[in-house]
Image (cartoon, rainbow, N blue to C red; front, side):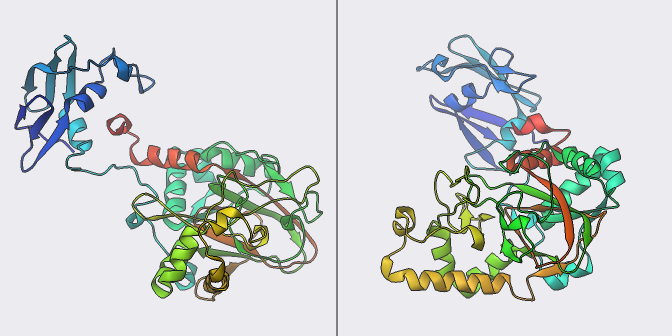
Length: 393
């Protein structure tokens, strides 16, 4: 990434740096705010020490110089000296933006591998339990595959909930909920949720009744003496891409109309998000970053939030959108059915991959947990910039 500064000019408001084949401008207030000297920035905690209010309102440059094209030194009118590495200024150029961060984000779909049943059946992403437990490289491989495909199997996991919990904690800490932290359950209705029954559950994401749905989810089938109980996976990002092409108006509707969801099976539990969300959630660039869909947990279609975006006359059209979306994610081309086996853990991105369960008979014991989205992305960032994290801050 090394980019030499060939020259610079400045006026009362900005410094303009000349690079080999382009230039970029920085406001003086921006430069002073990003000083990384020991008075302004804590080198260990990577936190600012400078209070924005302490920057002089009449900020100006007394002198400035280059050091072998590798750094820019500025003496300010209050006597403070700032030194900026050329690499830092190149990476964080904003006028214009010269380089994107090394860190993948949910908007960088080029780093994702969208899939359908035919593609994923031939070569699903796999890692080995021992590799993950014994080395950071094994964890890195696991994290990257989850990011790229939206899920990954961990083969040869001991058929033991203690080992499974240790596996999850190799990635990050477990997110506690009203279900507990690490769950180990059967179809005994210990919690009044369809997950604790034997009935079929259609493709869905978990936690639509929370403001922030769980980021990642792990399942480990410990035992099943009976029939049925198949699992399915759906790449909801792939389906959303198809839906947008096939039904652009309906896609826009499911991207703007909030749906109310709830969890109210327990006598002392009634959970709804602090605000309602649409099925498709996009970032400021318009890129899809999350799919929130759970047929079972949809509330009554009558909330003020819903009808702030939905004209009552369009209710039938909205149901058409829901029906066509459900048909798409349930199609044989998109819904991959598999039978989980003891010793095979499944970790998946709950913001991207839908899952389901078919009806079953007999005793079926499952364990698993949730991990927060931020915690997963934190680990992913560490994979990509392990040796150069501070350059991105």
